[in-house]
Amino acid sequence: MKRTLGYAVALLVLATGLAVCMPAQEASGKKSDLIEPAAMTALNNMGTYLRSLKDFQVKASVTSEDILSDGEKLTFTHTTDILAQLPNKLRVEVEGDQKSRLFLYDGKTFTLFARRAGYYATVDAPPTISELIGVVNEKYGIDIPLLDLFLWGGPHASTNEITEATDFGPGDVGGITCEHYAYRQPGLDWQVWIQLGDHPLPKKLVLTTLTDDARPQHTSVLTWNLAPSYNDAAFVFDPPTDAHKIVFAEENTAAAAGQN
Image 1: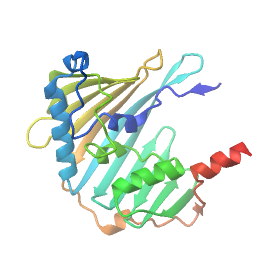
Image 2 (image 1 turned 90 degrees about the vertical axis):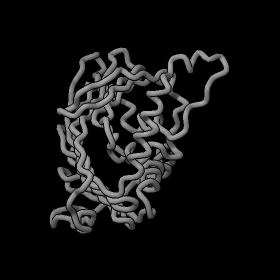
Image 3 (image 1 turned 120 degrees about the vertical axis):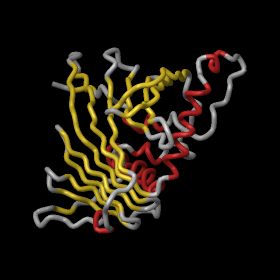
């Protein structure tokens, strides 16, 4: 049975709604009437705080909905565990119903290991995480999970697409008091629960795809550790003896081959 991807935007789309600069106000005033300044300020404060972190670990419990071609809705779960030392070390482990992946970056090389298939590929990498995100996406079509954490407030994230922003008041996530915010932009509704106090961390994210009548959702609950224990070996890939090395297919090369 052919599938259609119910959740098509992933967290990268969320990143396009977050930045340091306030969105430009439209002359008509219609757009600004639906945007609460406090909700936009909360995004700015969160982004500023996230960019101040030097090393951290964040674990995400993720639930995604997928819509089949006959309209049946399926739910899949996975966990994502990120260990980051900014600006140039990253370890991401993904375990779930349909995937088991390890992403490693040591400031010089980037490796993706598909554990269940037993294949891995390694390429030279740029000197920072923020550059790595763009390179692996544009060149190899790879989206690093929760990569929006490194884009919030950066030059590749803009609030200009946001048409509504609302502060819905206090909310609780895992016993942590947060403020609940909701945002709307073309094709996407999204919500974020931001921890109150001196550490404005995103604790929960909910994205709803509006381009599908079934309104599939993607939910991530985040647990943060701002003082993780690790050593440099955590970012270095040591392939299992039965693993097979392959080469990443470049996006442009694959597209050109498809046209021939």
